Length: 287
Image (cartoon, rainbow, N blue to C red; front, side, top):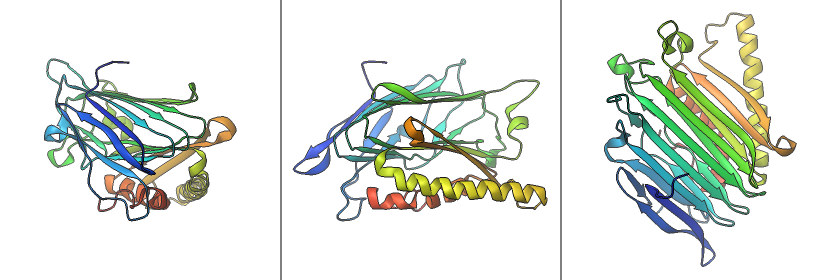
């Protein structure tokens, strides 16, 4: 991992409340710390990850390191979809993220989706190092592109890696890799779907939320099978699946594909609504 980061953020307990004790960023990254997002009585720090121009140009690399101290809650989000611009001379746009989450801390990472322009090349690598009783909510998702400009799955390459480590040991290693192929373009593989998402939940503070999400998503999966058997006209607008990971299956990963980005926004709002009690505001409120 690199030593010089584009952004560094540290959240620690100060006077019995969580606070950002270090917030550093340089071009093309900005860290925006709003004065108030969480409602009164909820101890959570919110930070918006913002890029100049709202995206990442070809050849640029953004790297960010985050530390969440004991008993602290940090919410990382964005103001809008992250745009990935057309590759110039074959150069990738890149993001690298490293998070250290300490005892009884909670990191919620819920950005808006990545949107790759035509001919874009993008790769991101995200590592989450959790203490034994740390907690994590991760949303990682992307769209088919600028549909209003008829750019549908027209990017050259998209690669997203998410690795979760518990007390230094890997418990979840995942890579999504989409490459254009003349004989089988991405649009042929994704067909009518225009947004793909992954939701990862882990930690003791999230156990009840995880169980309820698993129950609801399981019911949706059963309903999807039933509709397929009956050839329902609504079948296939949103598909989801889930699986467990980690010691005692304490972690949950949910994968979602939808024909409209708004459907995934609605899905995330519904499934993560109970997080409001921990982070002080509804996830994706107003989106």
